[in-house]
Image 1 (cartoon, helix red, strand yellow):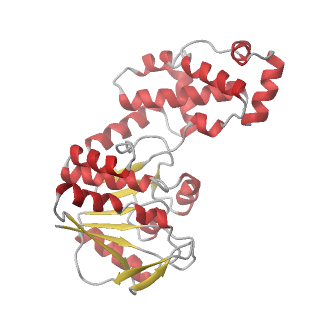
Image 2 (tube, one colour; image 1 turned 120 degrees about the vertical axis):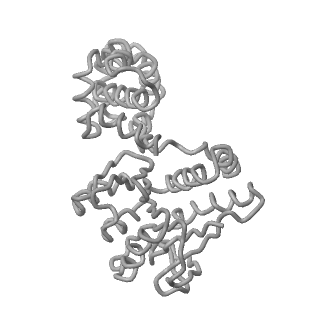
Length: 314
C-alpha cells in the first residue's frame, strides 16, 4: 500500500483537496486499498479552507509517505518553518513530492524547486519566477515532472497531476477507468497549454464567432481582414471595429494566437519538421513562427518540443 500525504495549510482551497478523489477511485477500481491517503498539517486538528469549511488533519510525525503533496494558501504566514522542514525531509524520504496550484510557492520556499522546471497557476507564474529566480518556471503547462518533484497548474489541473501519478503506478488502463468514473477526460498531457486562444477571445456575437471558426479551419491559408469580414457578413471596417470591441484584440493578433496554438499542438503531438508545421499553420516559414512563439511563450518552438518529449519520456 502506498501512503499519500496531503499537506493542508490554513486558507487552502477546497479544489486542491478534490484531486485526492483520484486515489479514492483508483482503490475502487482495483478493489483493494492501493493508496492510503492522509490529510496532514503541522499541528493536526481542524484546518479551515479559504471558504471557511474545515477538515480534520493529522499532525506531522516521523511516518514515511510514498507521495507527499502540498497545496497553496493565500494566508500570510501559513508556510511555517515546520512545514519547510517537513517538506525537505519528504524530498529525502519520499518517492515523489508534489504541489498543486500555488503549492509550487511552498516547494520553492523550501528550496525544492531550485534548478528544476516547475509550473503553477497561470495567474501566479510570473510572481513565482520573480520571487524564486532559481526555479525554471514554465507558466503554460498543465503539469511538470522534474525528477522526483511534480508540480501542476491551478484548480482542476491537480486532477491531471493525480491521474498521471496513477498512470505511472498502475498503468494507463486503470487511469482511464478512474477518469471515466470522475467524468473527466483522460488526463490532459503535462505539456498541454493552460490556455485556449478561442476561450481567451470570448467573442459575444455569432458573426465574430463565425469569423474565428473560419480562421481556425483555414489557418494554412492567407487570412485577410476582407476574408474574415466576408465570413462574418460584415464590411471590413464594421468587422474590424466589432472584432476589437468584442475580443480586445485586432484580427491579425487573434489569427496569430490561433496559429501559435495549432502549431504548438503539432509540435508536441507529431514528428513533423518545424518547417512543415510552420507552413501548415500559416506562418509561411520557421523564422516567423519562432518569433510568434517567443512573443506568446517566451521560448522558441525547438525548446518547447524538447521539453514535451522529455515529459513523455519521464
